[in-house]
Length: 268
Image 1 (cartoon, one colour):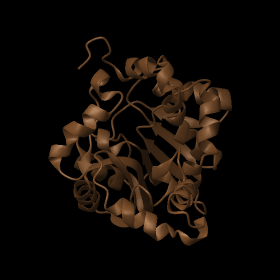
Image 2 (tube, rainbow, N blue to C red):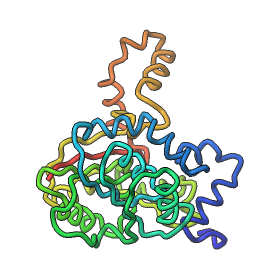
Image 3 (cartoon, helix red, strand yellow):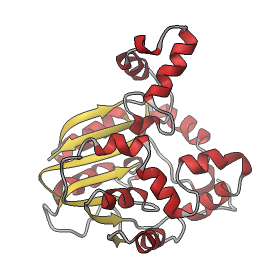
Image 4 (tube, one colour):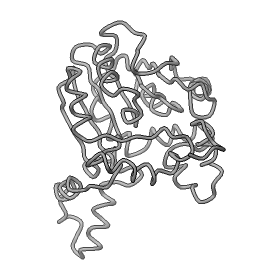
């Protein structure tokens, strides 16, 4: 590990200072002003795809591992009563950033600084638990899922998006070597698809949807399904209309790229 950079905040700050990583910084919503980054996420194809799973529902939501608060901002904009769970106090990538975003935007976001494995809430508190790129960072994947189940109301939804998947445990090192920040702060991880599914099911959830890397704009962002169809049509020299989404989904299901993204929707 690089001894010069040890915290998540320092790693992201280093990334922001690299001219070669400007596109990645923007795609990951690490750029400033934070309010503009949050507004861009709220208007993104990723968020449009996520909110399809609860567009008719409103209530209380817990955003686990809220980071800079971009998802909490979008949830509050949709009318949810939002609690952002973020253990890092950072003003750049943690709880401090979320509080600043809430103050500047005027949106109500309660911030709680703790970990997802030990949630300080009574049973059946929330209507929705949302995690964006969080499960693969869990100190204990099964405990985090169990806690999410416990604090959800009956019928409540659990949505975990953009989780890194590997095909076999031996692929983990390859993924970690390819990650732009792992060498700097050592906090990345990935699980087998069955390990995610087993943890979610063991908590008590009924899984409603499993989305592979090309099945939804949730996983594809900043790319889109329509963009993939366009690229495929140019490569195959056939009209985009004749390229079914099912084909893209099937091809993605065969992928063994270490760290590819999956998303999950489950219900209590």
